[in-house]
Image (cartoon, rainbow, N blue to C red):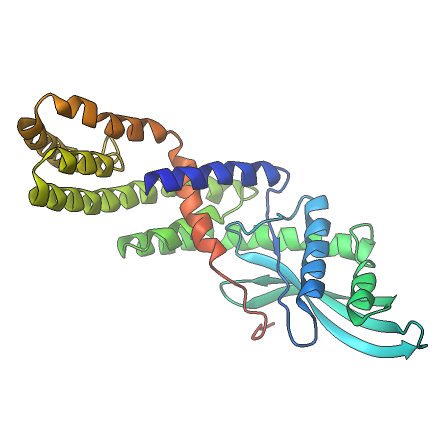
Length: 307
């Protein structure tokens, strides 16, 4: 488990480098539907991602941000021209909007007229989307305004969010709690600092909860084996327990019992335990990775948005 979390934290480090210029991240999300093929939806999502990342107000991956931008498309007219080859010409009204994935609420929107032509319907859509770019003043102003909306939201709701995270942690819902806490952006300095402190509190609660589960599994395994092979398996489990865990005393008792039965061989066996401890160097990154994993499993609901 801990090696997995460490791997996730390494990935998170890469994501953090990508998002360094974004102190208030927004993610782009466009769902494919019956009217828009998946390759068209993917292209539009990429287009929106490029716009927001170029402006420093977005991220190109699914991080813990609960705010996202998407687009509603209305085909004003569709013409089919010629026959060799056939050309499709679309006039589209694209409504860009900023929404909250948790409340399913739209906070702001702007409608941009687009026109595209191509020798397939998909290419006509895609060529129309090329009309969306950060150099357009209305689009630029829209996403600058989106940043302010997010900052204002967390400034006013940050303390409430932190209290909700505490409540979730008390219910052993640590991944969701860390998701909420790590979503608070650095641009909201006061509440961001409080969130960072609470992240470590929740993470320590998580590790304590997880360590106790691992210890119980290790005890059961040792009780059913009582031999060198069993000791080796137990050592691998103990490698996942924090070295300063609240159950360290019980771990020491178990280790003493194992050593009493396998003798000097335990010194070789426990290397895997020590090596596992050395792997855990970046707790805050690991805590964030848990929130990221939870956030990645959340998908915006673009069908029942409210204004």
